[in-house]
Image 1 (spheres, one colour):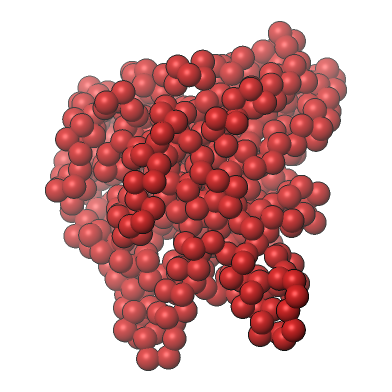
Image 2: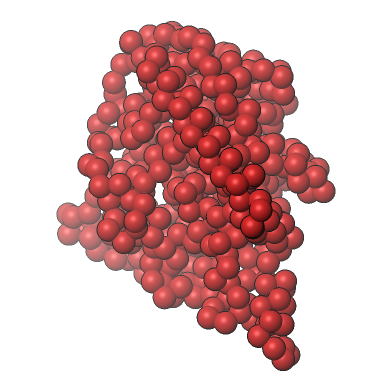
Length: 484
């Protein structure tokens, strides 16, 4: 059952080939069997999952329900889930039981989906390898000595290994797309404001966006459809109708204009990754798309811009974790200042502390204009580059990551090398445009992903292009043999 698509699972449930309880039990059994090797889940909610499955079976027996009724999923542990630990991968929130559900949790519950548990992640979504989690690193199902990418490493590892058919994720600078590329999955970050951020624990509020990781663009489209829409509780949510992503998947690519940013194919891209992407470009041309070079001249400035803006917002967002209201509280303290210092020092890991300090510095008196204000001006230049490019093309195609997944521990002592893993993905977050990664080949028996970027609220066109490519190739159907 774990090799079936969401459409096939839904058809099987409605045809009574298996029940949601049987399907949920199958995945819970795989989690019990395999997750010790992967560490993809922080919390497994078996009792809740089986209760939801029973409710879904009753709905289906009554002839009701939709495409997602009775289908299990993993929720990234950054989304608040009522009555369930929501840790954000941090000691700071290790004992935090959320008192309410995030909007996307509510939406997917309403669609009849079954939550298997909460997926592991880099602490407060800060990381590119899922090695900063308080609960230990996640392993890549394709090679247990390698990272799955981050921060949504638990989500991608669970789906890639068949421990969940689909998972939610978040993307602040590439945290859906980069891990999807390293584990042979399809991952989409929608336009900023398309999916509600209510109940999603904030890292960098102007960059964070929720999305989904799946085996295929078709699977991703079905779940993104259920997740999307305006939410009055989220001040960054956009009040705009949601396109029908599913019905748009059959459109021809004839006349589609695809741009190749010359800056993304310069020095630094692994030759193996380049070869896979160049082969994918030929597939798109064979499907009727036209391809031309475009320029994003400010894109080389994306990484330094991001690592001013994101830590600045993080330092503000994480100020609430002070040991007073909720979160980790140090014991044996005698003054309020000592409570703050020790609670934060004990509760936050090294990477989170590093980014808080950077953010506090760039926002401090005398440095705000020199760093933060200048970074915001460069962010506008990056946005303008995309605006000009989308006047010439419909989609932009390039690499997602520079190479295949690196080995665990290879970059933990070099923060700058770690930050450069997101060199191709960060610009989309700074501009707020939708972007996705999809499998396009293998190098050294490890997956390679390519990135598609679209204009604002053009998720439908992007998903259709990915779907048509996947109809012509089979890379997305391949699974790691150790978890067959």
